[in-house]
Amino acid sequence: MRIVARLLIWFGYAWCVGASLFIGACLLAIGLKRGWSAVQECLSPFNKLNVLVTILALSPGFGAIALGEFLKKRGEAKTGVPQ
Image (cartoon, rainbow, N blue to C red; front, side, top):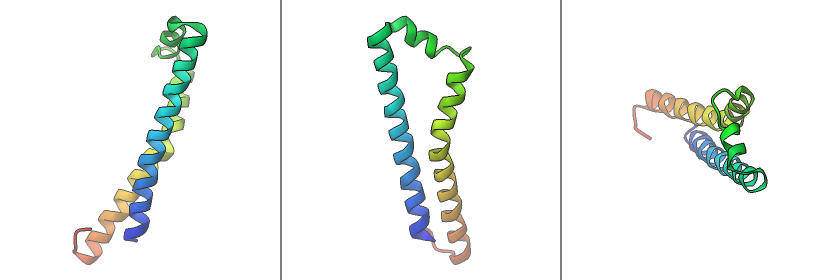
């Protein structure tokens, strides 16, 4: 379980970084194509669709990190050895 926990944590961080870079690249492309006012509209807290899509894009990474940490703690509780 220790290897699976480490892989899940690694995958989660890689997913979050990749999704963040993708979102940043998309915002940069919007800014270059339509202007920076379009980026402000996109990042507005009243733009509920953008908030929903951002949460959906980052949730697999956060879920993998949470599951990996849970498995890591469960392994420590069973063996009594910190991993």
